[in-house]
Image (tube, rainbow, N blue to C red):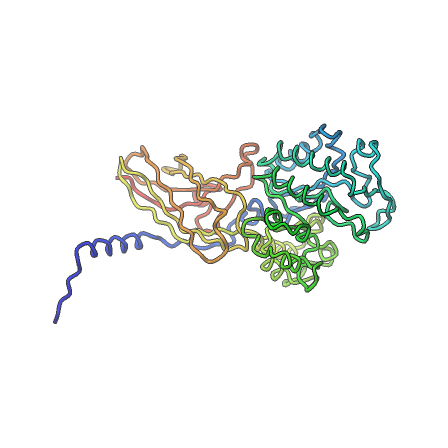
Length: 454
């Protein structure tokens, strides 16, 4: 029988690759890890003035009147806004908010200095307003200058603030939703729209801003600079017309924008109040799962869920299922954690999958710790850029390597994603992986595995 010789270098490369592949240890997937349903920056959330039920959530939405904060063209009193941010963050949650000047049924939120300066306004009875609020003349250049000044001041003070999850653009239109239907003649002129969008883009380079109207501008750079929110979700999300949210996104060529900017909004209130979670699949409105997977949504206001202080067991279970579908879900599928020696670096590789429908939109840092005799010691941090881990079935490899002073012995290696809100409140919601070993040895930490220092 003829023998074949394997070249020496090829043998080394082959055995090395085989050894490395053998060092990967598969991990156990568990989408029902305790408290994973309250992962930060995602899920079903309560809206402003909603009584809070026992349903788990990581964020709250609130409206705030521009007149409460803006007292002059360059004069701002942030105290009312600070109060709301602190109220939410004190509970370990992050805020989504919208400033408005015209909320049907509420007193006007137009700053008084603009009214005193001669800003023209309009009475109306639509949307149950009964002439309580008033609409401003959006063609007034002084009003637009005030909007710009406010946006720049807000960004200078709050861009990157860990208490804030997302901002919905607001200011213009009924409820700050960027429409005045049925008074389309009140529409903000196109040049003014560009000015507002440019102001948001320049003022917020860290915190994500979401818009209601995907067709507000035809400027390619501008429209791709934002996330979007559907305020009639599961009612007018799917459909052939431009007033259907996803068709509007298609027309604007923004269907891939979710990969870098968040999608969210509000479940249409009549759908919410029509027993939305009493059945699975939901019977009222458009199919929840189809809408979520189509839009790659991350969060939605669901105030009816939170108004009911004790949802039924069926509603609770179905709403948990729905909230888990939103946003990211990270699973560490494999771990490569070799033993090490004193004087040699400690190294770890992991393969991470995103089993959700969207990425996480902030590059939060990774903290790594060693555990011995039930005592955990943080040894370093890593930048794994989790924002790049898309829900596309890919196993994204991330690595960690650090010099150490560990004595010979047996250890465990743990890691976690650090919520920046912890700098303000140690009780901030913690990001949990969909892994069997999540919280195994320490609350909020994923156990990567065992290793030995020799």
